[in-house]
Image (tube, rainbow, N blue to C red):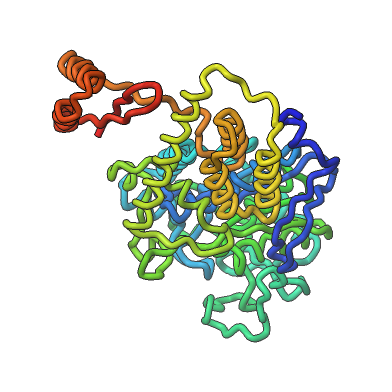
Length: 481
């Protein structure tokens, strides 16, 4: 049976996710049966995303890969927040892009352009697949205004001196996602009341302050200003995916506020369930157990890792080694170990590739191979258990009862989920001068003449020149030290 045949042995793939809304592991069932509609909360582009932010996008990418691996077609949309995200969750303070523009002595538009490009570049280096629909808040102002008008017609809004607000007391299910004790919230514990009627009310539209000249502001039926942070995701996700869609992903920090407000405003406008499955990834925490955040000043971005000689995909490998719903511990030694493990995996891949040569993986006759394949599938389909799937991959690679052709075929298949770019890895091209080549030939002659001491001396000379020799059944292999 071919590998493709093995993969399609079951009539329907059962994939399970833990739904934040129900707090239960549920068997996934898409609305239309075949195409999955998935929305990913994207970045606020006022600065470069740090690696803690990027973990959430790696997780969303793995979720999409698993769905596609299971035979589903996925339509994924993601927002770019380029306006309206204020420095305070209390709907107060300065717009984060406006603040960054002031500090960098440029415009909010230029800040948005700069950091959107940076985010997409970092995502590409992490082998995160491009989403099908990338939508910016500033490109969808009319849709946000229309959604606010629907909420106004449904009597969910009221106006204060600084904006249009959502009245959460009129939405009985407010707080269900986060299990919020709305009545028990203390005024000032999370937000300042100001002119709000309820502690949990939030801004849908903010008015420009008198005498203020903003880079980003628009006319609206409510007054000149700009949208609140939350309304963009509802307006854009429903435009592209429908008023009810399958999956919404994000970090756990979005649960108590942003995603809770998305549900309230979306369902308040439509009267329909907004999202069927909510999936959230946990924080990346430093070795001192503090989460990575710009406010704490302990951020590390992908550029920092690259400056230290770390392959961005080694960071992806590190993320795969922790379940997405568990905290990911980060530190120098932890990163180094992940990088070394990823390097070993790449070396093993190149060894298999060389041994396989032109042989093609056609048949999975080995019962052991089928066992590994079934085990891997059961793990990734069980709420994206990538740590266990990585362990299965390592067990498979170390199993001497499997042929190299089977190992290579399985590794390429597993890579469809891991997204480690193993299909693109090529042997390193070495820039050897004639002297190194001559030394290599001399060492081979010494080995043929059983002059082991002479061969070792030449090995050391080659090592001191910056190269390491690996002796393989097919002859010596040279790589940079």
